[in-house]
Length: 353
Image (cartoon, rainbow, N blue to C red; front, side, top):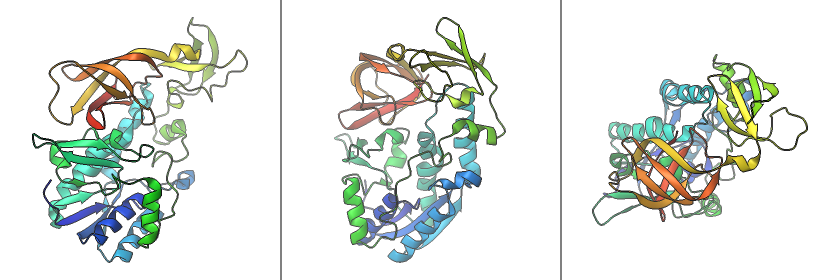
């Protein structure tokens, strides 16, 4: 990666992006702060930290503190098209999407890398907990962040080399406590701001209600056991995800878990926890950080963000890959990302089909 000159910093209004900007400013870089206006929180949704006017204010206050320019760019149409609409469609189809992957790939980082040229910036910076280094053959390797609890490399597997060449991750070598400490030392106004815990556009976590507000309510249906016996009824498949235990509305009979969702019939099939374990998955729409592997190989696969990862054999296919795990994994969920690692390096990823 060439030495940055002017850097465009993606400013969400959270502590991470603010401290990333402050650290780069301290190091003497010429900065421009950019906040993407992605979504308008309405009504009860205003309980969320992300996507609210207060976040844009926090980003502006940080830039004022640092003495750098700050711009707000309207990306609401792109966010709806590339993130929100597919999110709703996936839930109605019985999948559980991971919108942060699509957001980074289509709305945030790739778009900002293109936008940087208009601001005369050679690079962009974010507050992601991830790292980059250069391999012996000259390509960039995407690595886990140093803080295992905050590592966000899982969300970034879809970035092409052309974007990685222009990205800077100032927090990649830091832990979250170190980031907050640096923020206080540098006088960042929001250094003690709480982290957001839910999806930025569904801060209350009630996905079914959100889908309904988009005019795409799912239909009521049956809750069945594995033998086809009707145990109850539900108000829409968008309220469920594989492995879910709470909110089924079933009394008695011991603990039950969502095993699968059948959108064609609007059925939700439940059963025992032991039936959630599988050894295999198929992933589609794969992106490889470097070249597509030509032969099967062994790696570590994460099947959700908080998954610790598990060893398996990966076989590349025409548009994805297949995995056979050494040990069965709980609740392999359609729509989630399966991200492949070799040690700390992200090899690639795809979406569980």
